[in-house]
Length: 109
Image (cartoon, rainbow, N blue to C red; front, side, top):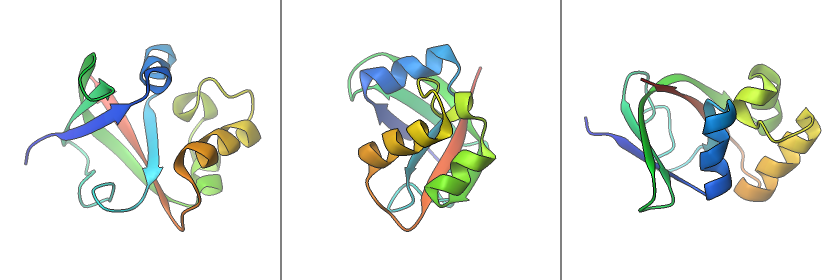
């Protein structure tokens, strides 16, 4: 199977340079366990045509946003947040309300 393309805002892209290893999305359409399986090639991109980092999908976690933030260490999912409440608010503002979210690790070579 081909790669999964992960476009990010500049701030989110830069977060991967300071310790972020998990990306969180609403669990819908292409953002599902079926498509984000361990070992699949991933391209993290700054926007649609900016700088890119190649890697592979690692661990995948699904559930409520609160549960995901309880399970994954804060600095690995939202390194700019001062605490889990702030990380929750930042992600909720970006992603909106959803019944289920998916967080997937990106392992860089």
